[in-house]
Picture 1 (cartoon, rainbow, N blue to C red):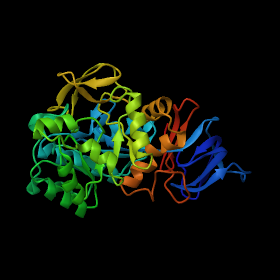
Picture 2 (picture 1 turned 90 degrees about the horizontal axis):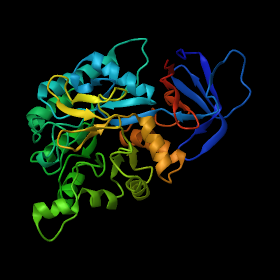
Picture 3 (picture 1 turned 30 degrees about the horizontal axis):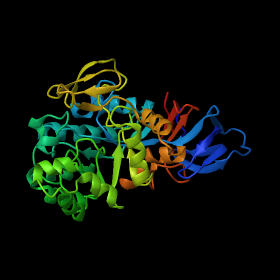
Picture 4 (picture 1 turned 90 degrees about the vertical axis):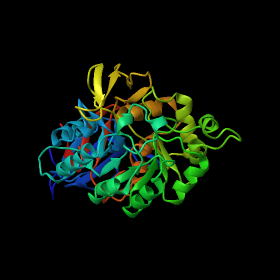
Length: 400
């Protein structure tokens, strides 16, 4: 079912989740692709279409700024079919806005990924998909000692002759680079000109290197505590005196945001609690960092391109690289929301905010989506009392 232009629908029989509070016996009214009102349920005119939240929660659709694939597909496969398969999978888990994320790989692979995502966004289809808000250029500019499960052969310092071609597609909205790499300053400067959320990730950078990056426009760090520098790693790089790392820089700087993978495998509950208390719901995002093993049986898969990616193993809970390190998550955003709510003292509005409005704000799209508000896109997820997805509505189109 699609809420067509001039057609009205009301989502009723649920508790509306706003960024700062809950509205019991709430209602969200939509016309076409937009929300027109949010509040307590009132008498409705005859003929309006009703969508039953079944006594659960009516929440904004999730916004995932760091996601690699799902349902057997990786965005780096570089085909429109792979993009659709992965997007459909994340829609089932409540994500209505998605930033397909590159891995370390060749120039050809990354350009193929960007172009396939652009094609899917342009194509007119009756299929319900999340909004593709742009690509997260995540690989290949990683430090060699922090590559994680990515291919070392696909990692390299940034060169303008390469990254300017990515930015020229006008589809990069998030741009990651290890701050200590030669050429990082030029990369950050270009990303700033293209109005990207500039991030540092897979990096062993020092406080001073982070400061240089911050001065160039960097305001976010990928998956906190994962593939990032620490005081001990600074001791290894610089001996004494010990120096501050990415962690200290993010925690001390109020303008910096970061993200956590709340899958129950990457970070223990006390780290999730610590991150939320230190940064707050306005500067902490939930991300999936999910790979192609989402909704797939345990087994071996390729991270990145289907022909040239790196092997990892899914045990049904998380991905594992051959060397024993973690290799991305295999669960959707609804899992992250449930785990964060069950294992921290964060309120439900705060948890939902970290999965919706905060990433929307950090990427400059909060005027379009991220919260239930009149004038915004009709991106809604219906959750039961256990925060399991009942139904997802993306731009007024109800998933089936």
